Length: 203
Image (cartoon, rainbow, N blue to C red; front, side, top):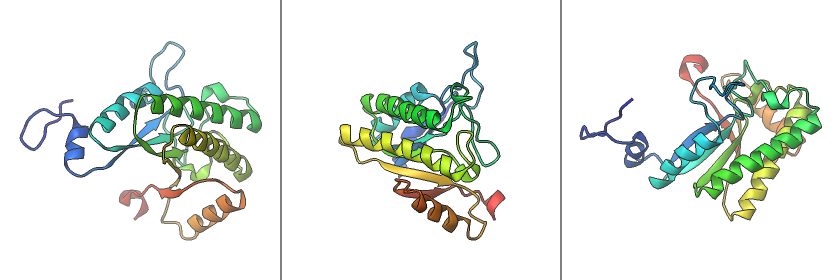
């Protein structure tokens, strides 16, 4: 695919976005979006290395990078929150440790690459759960493991990184207040309560 700027010249679309006032690019990261033969599942093969390649371009054009960890090997949304294949069969404690280690390793690589990360999202549209877990006690344990890794890296690299928790279905009255109340009850460490909004689905 070839992209062009307003003058009709071929141009990196990220540069075009930056030139038109966009200040942040959200980049999704999947744990291992490849099968046993190394073939990608499709949808962009969004692993850490791909995020680094995109993030370097984002930083080059003076925008911020927003990392979105799905904690899955493919897309996650309210209908599917499958855990990464490497985490299958783990107890919640083991999965919590694995999520911490993955976040620390992946985000560490991204920061070492010189990418200007300003936000990191723990899970994607976690309305119905995250990484194969559906009980709030377990989901919040995972969220706090992710937060811990991000806070430690932010301190290590002297970066101001905001932690994002992300839901969807904002049209359902009262549910977001309940989610916020639950996050507070389990002392989840985060900065931004985020939502998807698609007018086609949400009105």
